[in-house]
Image 1 (cartoon, rainbow, N blue to C red):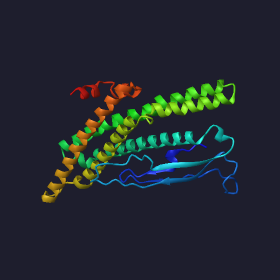
Image 2 (cartoon, rainbow, N blue to C red):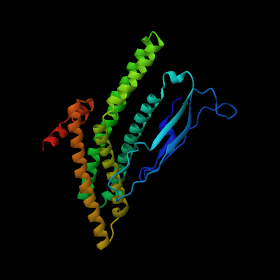
Image 3 (cartoon, rainbow, N blue to C red):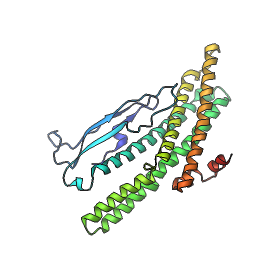
Image 4 (spheres, rainbow, N blue to C red):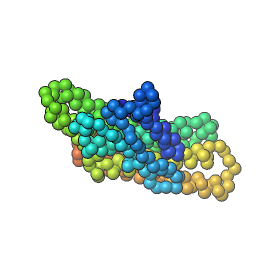
Length: 279
């Protein structure tokens, strides 16, 4: 059963809330088809709404999970441990997708005409520059996992399956395929995975700051103590997230140099992170 996630998952960018709707196999009478090989028998989702004062954001790990009823003889290939591995990859890709969409929404907010009419705004420029740095890293991470890992390994798996002479070779090829995806996606390495999660949280925190900037300082207002205090708090939070993202991205770069990942060549093709690490 193929599930088109963009069609069944609706994400509200600013609040972080989401709704999921899945329908299993259905026969002409509208009753779940018992002959479906894999049916979704349930799903769990905990809604976590990040707030603007929070310093950490959840990256959707363990928040969204799918449970499958695997009928015989599919379970001979899709064992429970492999299903859990598929679920881990799904959760990670969904977290990256969520951050990428949030950064795109932030770009739309910062490029509104009402901001440009205010003339030169140094904080607007700083917001745009940091957002660009975050999007560069997230886009390369998403491309690496989807293209360099999933697509490449899937092509290799198809070739192995077409040349397999017996069932045991099919099972072995599929298990090696899943194991390779987990390894190349860094899900087996807790240190790298935690570093990636931290970067994702920083990006979501930044998107929360952009929402505050849009809500509180979109239109010119008469300056008072309250407005000045809000601007001061926003600037302080921005400085913190900017420094934290630079630190976290540099640490991630240092980790990737040790494991010689293909992702390293993508995020440091212009030598930016290598120069940042030396400074």
